[in-house]
Length: 169
Image (cartoon, rainbow, N blue to C red; front, side, top):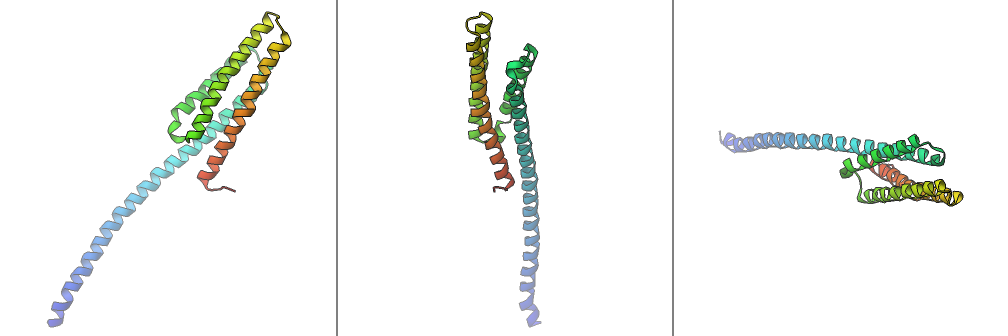
């Protein structure tokens, strides 16, 4: 009887600790699962955004590479694709790094300048001021957009994807 009085509080404490452990563990497990699920969703969404941005950039580069030989309909298509690109970036800003957002803003500014230069070049060609001067202005502007900005942005997107996927190197 004496031993029962000594063992009973210990057994109650052990049973209480086990119940307490199960309650805490189940709450922590639920919290971890919730976090993993939400993180996986955000992670997947971010990768999809990167892939879509790369796809849009490659499409714009392809269209701009033959810009000099395009019809007015092709030019309108480029403008629509570029506007889609800008709208996509604006909607998905929360998933993009600030440096990538800055590069996209710079591309948007350069895009505007590119088409202003192209427009001025076309006017010069139509007015027969200097045919080669207008064409040269268009080519310079287009090349600046394609080489200085798109390539840098592609490299950064790929770098960020590799970092997120943990496959650096």
